[in-house]
Image (tube, rainbow, N blue to C red):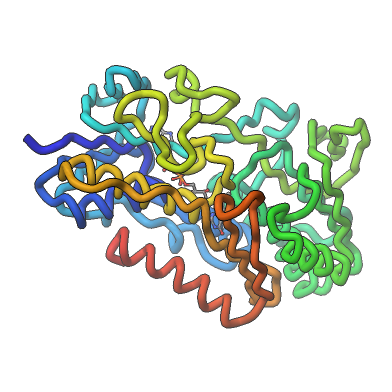
Length: 376
Ligand SMILES: Cc1cc2nc3c(=O)[nH]c(=O)nc-3n(C[C@H](O)[C@H](O)[C@H](O)COP(=O)(O)OP(=O)(O)OC[C@H]3O[C@@H](n4cnc5c(N)ncnc54)[C@H](O)[C@@H]3O)c2cc1C
């Protein structure tokens, strides 16, 4: 009988995992992947949408196009997970499996920051899309890019937001009437890479962007247009661009699998404490950042382990803890940081300065995954 593999979540991690299993296992496995949405969107596409660089329709990659031999993609909402029994309940029924992989990503905890529900955030698709109409109306005053908690997805994204906002205001000829502040609950923009952080801080200084490290936004009063910080200070604003505090999806919390907010795993094998149950990507506590490239690398390690187990030969490869993140510096230029969390006693991050060549590289990164996963 072929092995039943159930993948929860068709994001960066789930899509890559299911694609490799389809390529490698053929009819040796029945792979089912479940997601409540009808389309995948790259995290960085939210910046393209909010800054008017692409319409939402252009960046939605419909799951209807994800067609892989041996893989069934089901649009269902997961309502309960029993990891010991490897049984998953959805709004459409019950799924039992031999191997379970949890790739449900990170949700946003809007309630953790009082008042945030009345302000703007750019981390959800709806929030980024709403800002698309709001940003062109901002021509004067203080814009505050404010992060409400760490860890958050894609550590450089708030810095990218501030730099792209500078470009937008400059192109409209209103930059001199506006101030930009970035509030970040990290000591530097990209802590594992001092060179990248130095380059970003230099870019902020050149563009007169005020950088407030080691601070987070704890509340937003939209009626007074004031944000409160964790040191008790207040920052008035005319435009608030928030990053909500992150949390595990409620269904994971209810399953009892989350400890210290995320699912504990062996960081090299991605195994949870439950037999034949793995967790990958933003939901797993590996010590690596919440970013698509890391979810993908974790998926590759779990795929190799599942292939070895199903074939009954060999061993899986370990999660590398390495990934390359592109960083929008504005002016169409993109930088890159190659981070590795497991290669030495402390994380390393090699910096590549912004260029048009790296812009093309980032475009190729997206196009390769669109083609590989969706045939587009
Ligand atoms: C503004 C922004 C910019 C970013 N830029 C980058 C970047 O440049 N590079 C990079 O590598 N990463 C970037 N990221 C981060 C990246 O998007 C995430 O880290 C990545 O998507 C995580 O992959 P994942 O597979 O763990 O989860 P996700 O891709 O979030 O997938 C999780 C899936 O689970 C589904 N799901 C959740 N709950 C349920 C449920 N109850 N029932 C059914 N389905 C459910 C969701 O619908 C979703 O499709 C960015 C993120 C943001 C917000």
